[in-house]
Length: 112
Length: 118
Image (cartoon, rainbow over all chains, first blue to last red; front, side, top):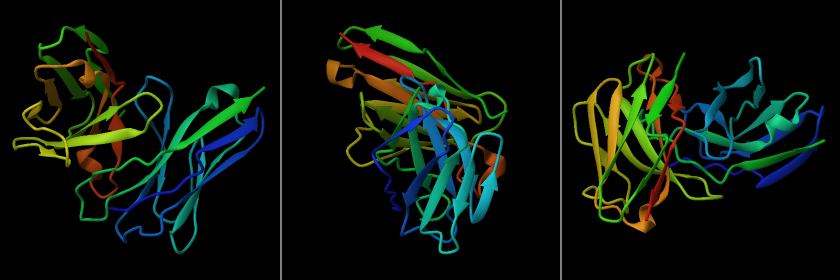
């Protein structure tokens, strides 16, 4: 199973850009990289997904280098409401089973 | 789009009773759904993969007779916690894989069900 490694926690202030990097050294050729956000007592919410290079949507950007062994989620100008746990996931690489194994995630604390 | 619902959102039951949790994909079809449980301050732990029209696949250490999964249609999977005990108290979350995007492993998660067993 592909595994991911993220910082356990990060602190930021309102209005700053936050970059969370995830390592996935054993990512398989057919795996996508997906980031989720989770608030307490809620299910994870899809943020962004990518395969290579850069992906941008209305809430975040995802940067993936050519070797795909890492990825960086970029949140522009965070607010207090962005305080949450952020999970980076890759497919299990065993052939389209769709299983996602959650790591510990990164707890982002945004301060005023 | 891509909305997944769960019912109930929270349930309190007595020890020894069984509890059924429903997971529905509201605007897409899902051949595959997944069930997770999450303890306070911990990450999500995958329990099983629910396959429409066939038996569920359980992760190692998860008792299939304890956690019964039925996936009778392309939009509904149910998890039944049988003979629940206090240690089964947890936050149960389902997810559904969008059939139309099978190449991307995109899963959409339900809001979760808080189970408390007294």
